[in-house]
Amino acid sequence: MLLEEEEIHLIIMDIMMPKMDGIKATFKIRENKNIPIIILSAKSEDTDKILGLNIGADDYITKPFNPMELVARVRSQLRRYINLGNYKNSEDKIVVRGLVLDKSSKAVQVEGKDVRVTPIEYKILELLMENRGRVFSIEQIYERVWQEPSYNAENTVAVHIRRIREKIEINTKDPKYLKVVWGIGYKIEK
Image 1 (cartoon, rainbow, N blue to C red):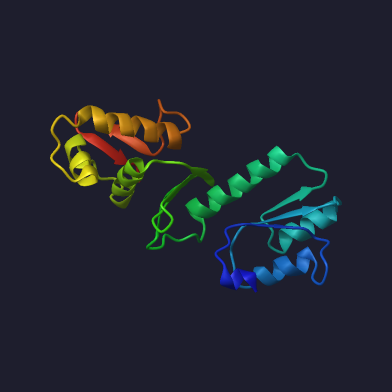
Image 2 (tube, helix red, strand yellow; image 1 turned 60 degrees about the vertical axis):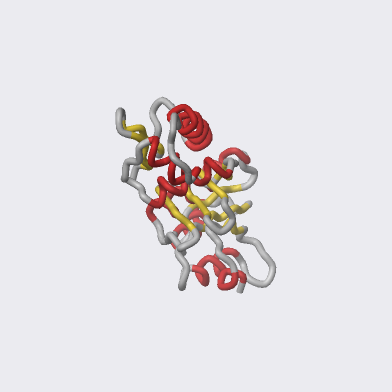
């Protein structure tokens, strides 16, 4: 079964499928997996929706549907799964609420969306995420990331921090992840 071989974070399931219908498949998946399942079906009767939700689906969307609504529901389920569910940090992944840093692929995701960062931005995020809650001064960040003494490093670090915030924060004036501790330095909020 593909679920045993691959790391799957969410399933969008149709009820009317060949071999095994979506209701039976959802029931079978729920025997040993707790990943989010969204049923997407042309069956719009209340009894169909109730049955789908009762056997273990996390959401039920009827066709025709608004693609933006489906995207919003997928993001909502992924956010809940990553923040509150059974999604575990592995040695290769650091997860801080909706912020995910994948050390094996050097990739960053925010709320399920890929975010492109430079190698320096990645190293800064990795340092702060591995030590979430700990405040690092500008000098400490510079010395650890660039691996050289921090002579006049303030502007260099500040520019990189600003760029990271623009990429990972919804509102840079009220950041959710990358916080400044005035007069001291920066940290990733727990």
